[in-house]
Length: 372
Ligand code: SF4
Picture 1 (cartoon, rainbow, N blue to C red):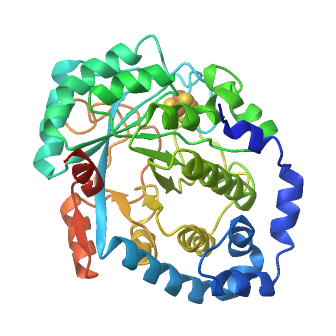
Picture 2 (cartoon, rainbow, N blue to C red):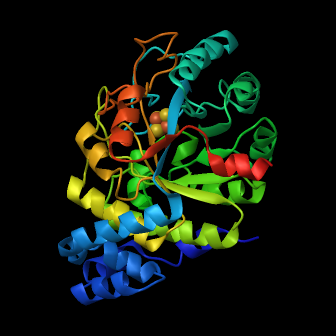
């Protein structure tokens, strides 16, 4: 049975970092002039040597995105079902060691949230919980999905890593997409930021996309939490992971997100800061490396930044997000997982997208097509 960890273990963080930072202008020019790029080209595109080529990268990324996705932006909204969590993560407001009121939505409350979200116009929902298997385990998800499924054409999930058989069960209930971010591929730093709970098992998390691929899920979302470690090296490992998954589970689709560490109650300062120009570089590098990949940007980013990157390679965004359970209708005052940065309403985001000549899409068309 193939497994990404075998490939991961053949790579050394320090060597990869050195190789990225030693890329030259010639390597960048070569990467830009090719039709198909490999992981060495990706290294060049995310390297400091690529910064003078940012305008050229942005134009190419724009063209490639429009060729593959047209002038569309997919819209989704997160719905937090629970803030219970058995893990300690140094960067998250839901961490077990953060004294706060814990809340898990019951069936009636889920339905209330669904009604409000549907009225806003969404058809693609991202279900989010902390990681607390006993309170929000597979049984809870099955019950929640029975309530949610009739109202949405696409259901994504960002919860604790599960077993293959659990994913198979949830797919029967309507699960389409699972997001599972490795946070960082730097093993020592991973241990520092995840000192307690099931999430402290680096390899169990690393193996999760393999379990999802074997279950045959429609789409897998990958990403690292930018700010924990050197973003270039972490992004290379994420691209390595993506490359392996695409070749191994070729029927599954993939997306990459770019979460930057955001303030939260009692929060951690980023070890490494990525500035907005560098984040644009990273987005464009992914697009130039991989024309098929969906690239997603959440409300963690500012209004101005999100307006500017719509045309550069991003294919899906969230809006109107509440990052607390019950945040839309049931309990607007409960503690958020992190502070959002773009507070505009869905209607305002729709206008912004249309003003740029793009069309907001409320369904995942690929999924509708697959089901025919
Ligand atoms: S990041 Fe996830 S697992 Fe970690 S404390 Fe937050 S909710 Fe829990």
